[in-house]
Image (cartoon, rainbow, N blue to C red; front, side):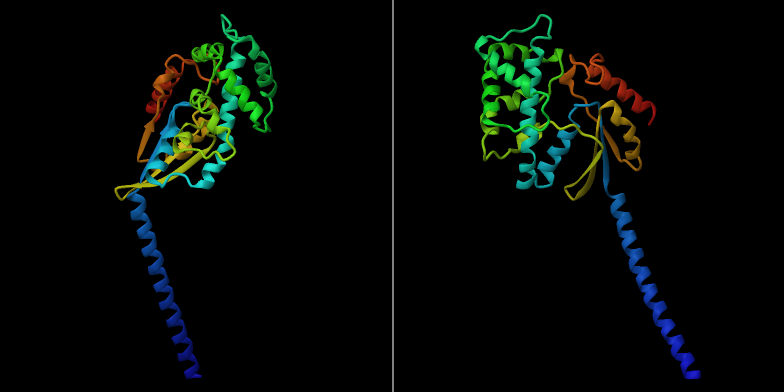
Length: 265
């Protein structure tokens, strides 16, 4: 009986020792993670919609995270072609609504305009060569160019000119987006996205959030333990209005938003 009791005590001692060693390992790992967390700079990008926050994130990826791999580039092709469609649809649709309206320089392009307007509401759209041909011919029309020059009077994505001038490459079957194409590609940010990168052995976590008014309620989730806030403003939008109400000046919206963040910090 005595031997049995000693054996049980020995087993307990071994288990307790193993538990202590396991606890030490866990505590050591937690301490390591705490130090890494303290040494990490958490950057929160804030700003109104279409101010360039996501572009900064993509630039950080290209510069510090080995950019985008071939599969990620392939996944962006549809977004880029959608930018082409949105751009030409918006411009030709605005020609008749501007005051004064802008006519086509070449009336023979009317059937092309009719085609573009007919595919405007289609969300599931096959980007055929016919579409790209019509879009290119319309972009070459001086009337369309004149309407583009007045783009501050309506809502047009800022990459419109960039991609409309590159229709030939974007329309190719073997098209592969360049880093510049990815930077210019416009996709509405909804939600919160984190990008991690390192500069000179310093760790950064950058958080990108949607800037439209209905997205700002999500910002509060990102403020805990933030090292710095980078407030982004598109100075080029000084003579444009926001999409949300088609009335408020974009630069004024940014200034008011910055003031609100500062007063509630």
